[in-house]
Amino acid sequence: MTDLAITASGLRKSYGDKTVLDGVDLSVPQGTTFALLGPNGAGKTTTVQILSTLVSADGGRARVAGHDLTTAPQAVRAAIGVTGQFSAVDGLITGEENMLLMADLHHLSKREGRQVTAGLLDRFDLTEAARKPAATYSGGMKRRLDIAMTLVGSPRIIFLDEPTTGLDPRSRHNMWQIIRELVSDGVTVFLTTQYLEEADELADRIAVLDNGKIAAEGTAEELKRLVPGGHVRLRFTDPAAYRSAAAALRETTRDDESLALQIPSDGSQRELRAILDWLDAAGVEADELTVHTPDLDDVFFALISSTAVPHQPKEDAR
Image (cartoon, rainbow, N blue to C red; front, side, top):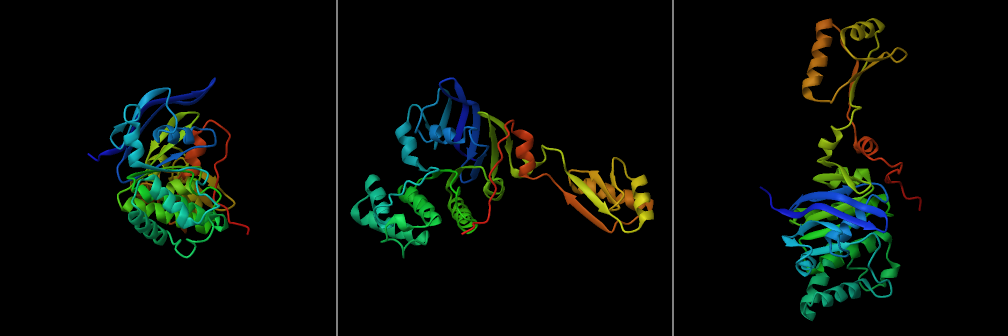
């Protein structure tokens, strides 16, 4: 069995009369990417704050890197790195100075601090800009510097709270590659996001958080199978073949204008074979067959109870 980097059971948190987390259970295997998906106000950031010891839970238990959050918070902090929604970069000093400051905070020697700083600046393609004020960096560069600063202490678990919000498409894809490389090095990434495509691209497992509760959890494919809407669409050019197919196949939705049939299906090989067998038995051949399976958009809207709309990546207008 794979060792777990993060476990949580019954996490609860309220602010005044507002319940933010209402009994959250989580299990994150080591060396994987776990995505917590949900609309604004669902409790994603609060979950990260609790698991990274920034705030205390009102109830429940959690272990991070094998340490209990309540009894060994210092051990948890020593094992993790956190990149929040808003950059921790100091714009008044250079990128290199930001890195060296982190090295000092981690009690590295001057020599080791400079070695680690140089290596991370090179890894994140920031060497040329290292001696420029961080305020002059683009959004993508600041995000890369932010994560580089997080890695100074060589954490094995990294919390990334909406790390690509506000980035243009190229910077977002660059960030995805960085995350993939971290996981390939054995780092565990706990990612919160409102970008459905991001969770689909990166996460080994996804949990959908809504109103402080986990609405569903699984791989992207497992979540997609939870919601209806999958179908096979058959299109014909011969009206006679279309009518024969409509008579041969059960539970079809007809589109007489387009000569197309839509059949509910989970897209499995077994169901596709059954549809093709029905067509063969009827002596009918479709001109076009397409399979539609639900995507994370369908999952999101089927599972959340709020009317919030998740962010989707948009082209940068600049």
